[in-house]
Image (cartoon, rainbow, N blue to C red; front, side, top):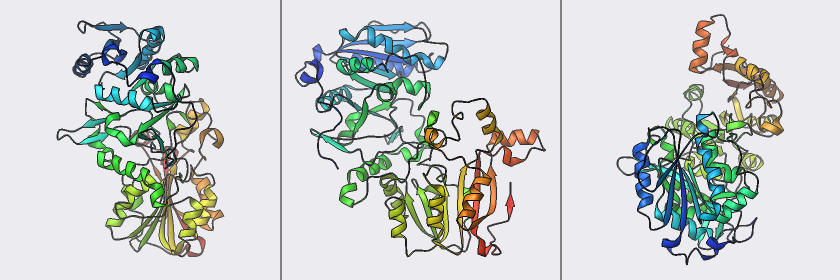
Length: 509
């Protein structure tokens, strides 16, 4: 861990930052803007307003709404949308903050169901005095179930801790989590002034890395030159609550124990002698990061079913939290994994998966004397810098009858062709890895890569969404492969093409 002060900026300056510890709560002026569309969240909004009213600060509450409403004394309601898109409502706060910048010391934007407490505000002010001017102490949002157990909302998809980001500042330790959305942000007057001066704050409603609703809460980090850092040494102080509590039930990987295990691993990388690196960049560069690697993908039954019954050892390259691999361990197999990063790797290791840490070269060297009956590359090859090199290097570790199982997006499907033709934002740059971070994969491309490594495709299956299955049922003559969003391909060594397995049937869909 880097124990020095955060770099890339000078220490913060300005009235609030320089005197935060001495500022009387009664004289601290705060402007709060709450985005509230319709009446669905009225009960949560009332709870949030009550919380702010209980604080000892001079707080002015503004509710940004698409419909007229009366919320009692001391609550201003601003009605109207910045543009015709209903999701643009949160962007109303930008002009409001700009127009009133000289009247307040602190500015808070939040969605109407996010509960920010006095404890959160005090923690933000204390941490701000220790941070450089271009770093903002950020928050994570979480939910509690009926028993009080905590679940962290930012944990999903390709989002992860940056292994190399841990820094100390004063009494605090910070790290960067790549999901910058927490449905809220706090800015001091000087930070707001700097954000406006960057030219990235006062912008029309838009979306890119995130959808429009999330973008309104992340523009300070994605548009204005600030870096959001999470205070992992005082995580409870920097946790705000999502009141509906409607997401945790279907996403067990958001449990506090899992999130805290990642933080523990993050802070002990140096102690454990693990490299603070990513195996490959899991996030694509297309809007909404489509086709990124999912750190928390569910157990892939279609992959598990193709691991031969005779297999005794499996190597998973690009392992996430290990749901698929865990199932194979439960079958009694020896499972080794090369994790996307050493932080998520520690979570998979807790499930009995043998982790091989390091970059591709280091992992390959550590496995030099090993042999595997099956190698898994689940949604990995389209993201690595040199897919053929990775395939060629690791398939050398296969036993004589060993197989490689690959899943990858199908960029030769009809929907992809159509969206590329119509210049859809997520598709218009496909074919340019520099702009997208993606190698275009199809049955033909994967087959060619396998042959260059001395292997041949044995099984090819298309994985179709429910919508694609419905379309095919209407157009009965349409080949399923043209609608498949994903491909599953099994490769086998050329010299053993005659070898058969009860789990593997020759075929193509």
